[in-house]
Amino acid sequence: MTVRKAWIVGIALCGAGLSFVLLLVVGVYMTAGSLAGGAGGGPKALAKGSVPAEYSPLVQKWGNLCSAINPALLAAQLYQESGFNPKAQSPAAAQGIAQFIPGTWATHGIDGNGDGKRDVWDPADAIPSAAKYDCTLAKYVKDAPGNPTHNMLAAYNAGAYAVIRYGGVPPYKETQNYVKTITDLEKSFAAPVARVDPSKQAAGAIAYAQEKLGTPYLWGGTGTAGQGGRFDCSGLTQAAYETVGITLPRVANDQYNAGPHPKRDELLPGDLVFFSDDLTNSRAIRHVGIYVGGGYMIDAPRPGAVIRFDPIDTPDYFGATRVTEDGAKALPTTI
Image 1 (cartoon, rainbow, N blue to C red):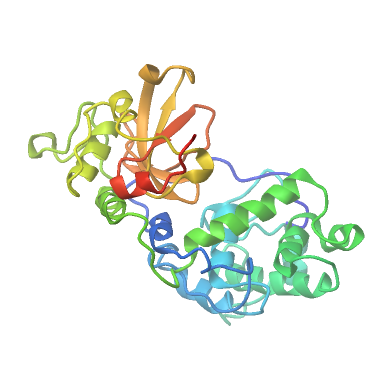
Image 2: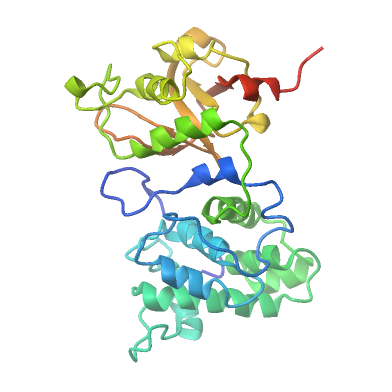
């Protein structure tokens, strides 16, 4: 765990059996300043349902162990390491929900639940150990320039010596990506501090889609009773916006033309996001989802899958459409 060269693969965000969902929709209600000052920074509450229920009390308690971490950051770290899978094991022999390698566990593992054992496979030990190890690393690198939490995360990934040697996050692509990924994910696990409404209609559409998480995909499905309430991708987006008074065309490539097209860095929760095998031709669009923030969408992916959260930053990402009038007015105009 001090030097990560192997990552857990195949962490799925699908299936009705999941005991949690990543409530990335929280971005709809988060003020830009709610996480100001970067990661860490003391007590922060977890977004409701963002962490599996059996682990949420542990993450909330131990995420406040020191000023370098907070519950949302610890949750993001555990998610990145294992997807909250207590049985995860990497090819590099990293083990458990926090992905300790045996040597690091031998030194830094603690008996978090007081049962007399230090068990890397028991989240009641591994989660407290991850928090304690984070705080220990933060002490090791406390004199390094830069953001203390970023330096702590870099030390978790590349070792404290590398952070000290380079005077901050070292110039390792893997480590830099690790720090960025976790600090970005942190926003998705933190409860909002205040509300903003970029679009009440967008929030309503997302709420509708969120209620459908775990629903099996049906080709041609529009959610009717005769179809068992199932959807295909554009049927879901159409139905979600129908509930807030916005009528969309039926198929994905027509929905692309239902409003202006924000750039990737202009996306807001509620924007429709599109995917195609031909990135030069909007008529070739074959998939659509509803963006929820944090780089994720809710979508009905394909036959055999269920409505779920999926990342949008894939090679077939085509573009986006903003279908709400108030949101469209907020887009910059090109002269």
